[in-house]
View 1 (cartoon, rainbow, N blue to C red):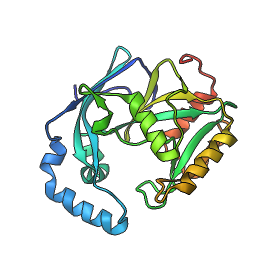
View 2: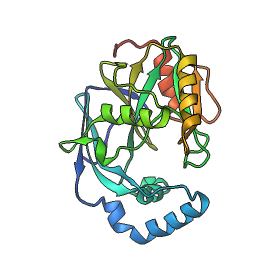
View 3: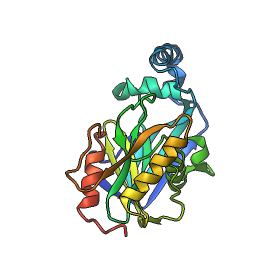
View 4: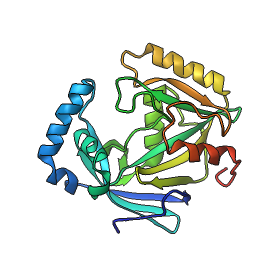
Length: 241
């Protein structure tokens, strides 16, 4: 299967069947010394980094509106070295975005904190899949989205109105799986709530919220994969309502 899916096009996704393989990812198995040396340099630059556990793909395909794949739990230090060797690694990254839609149809994204790897970058609150996000060996994308948004912003999306299906955008830098989550409050109120949450945190992961009100309202620091998602939303697609 390896990696077999269209690139640079938004795909409708009815199911995400990505299995967590308990074996070592080949990239981590074969690069122990390089991983350790790179992590030493990363820690010198950003001492607040934590060598937790994330997952990397070893296979992903798009079949009959489904994403089917295999991933492995790896150390964050492994992920950091992989970021510098994407094309030669035999691995890819998938992550999820809860597209937070306010009652006034504006989007609410976040800007990452200065101590993080993606300092100053803007995208929807998100994080890599972790072992906690898997149920009976398969990834629970909805759980990951709600967990990450709650941890980073304090906003609970468990009762939000969800899109009928997921969508995915695969590029050379990874595959983002996304879905609209609609809440009743206007964007300014959601932004206020996120700001209050960040102010109360001892070590907040994000700098604060970023409101996006139309397709041309692109903030500084926007991650490259975000523009197609923003355009998709404001184009008025209703296939997932």
